[in-house]
Image: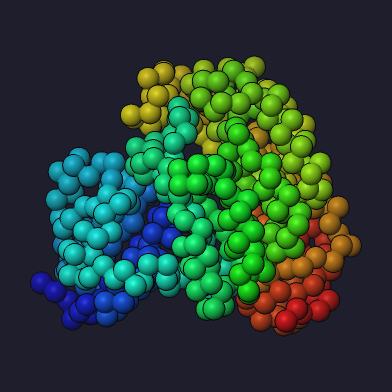
Length: 439
């Protein structure tokens, strides 16, 4: 029996996983709004007639979170709090047949490339005139721009090509048009995302064309920061660093997941690069763009990672002194090449190795942050929490990187830039005083 609280024609979109999933949810949000639906993103109330869950299926923890979320809304449906539950995204794409048997109360399952079918099921038209238009779920002043879908890389541990397919670049013209639309609605920071930014253009322009895309997006009026996430080290296009130096609105920031500091493990991972070549690349990037902030992620506990191999990765982190770093435990993913190998590292050992890397990085981050005390930095303010306004420098991406806090008594408008003098620093946060706002 339906409860009186259900709002007819209201859709609640729930997003799990990465920023690429968030963009997919924003596209769905925009299409449904264009069809006259009342749409919420991650509503706190169970009053929507329809719930669409955009799932992540990348690693075990993400899969577990996705399944638990599906079960939560299946229970809400059984209790009469929701009429329809639909599931889309990576987990659904990969396991829809098995999941449909296990959770029969879900009304329909959709893959990652089935937006038109999902809209048709919701009795909505796919509006081509809305392609390139996006209603944001992030604060209006920053937006993720997905420049390509899928991946052609052969990494042994990764199931993304299974869930997302091969690499498909979007055209420069389409991306410029979308960026212009975002800028008109107040977006100041653009975060370029893809499974592999550096592969951009090979399929449609027959060359790595990220540098031209960056230059074209840099010309869009109103865009003050452009940030690069998810670059791949093998075959890295050095010309993007020239554009970074030439254009003041391209952040001196690069997110480049390296996965391991052991040549042996990199070979097993099918990464197409050695530790020595990786170090040479890092040195070249830092030489070419002085002051650049490098973020990376590492996987610990991959099959075959001996203590000696882990020690190499630890020493690699110690030597390279990354500005930002995340460490993840290996997840044994079926249908990947690594799944054919024995998952031979105990869970406790994986945890110990991840903890050791992050403890090392915590000390590196503290030392690097102390060097910023006394400096005046340009900060973009995202939110207010308690007694502080909280923002980021050009060296920090939302959600994952360091933040800058100033007292709430020193008023700044959210979404604006300001000059902040750093007065103290912790491992992952900087504290400062407002010097001046930037209009």
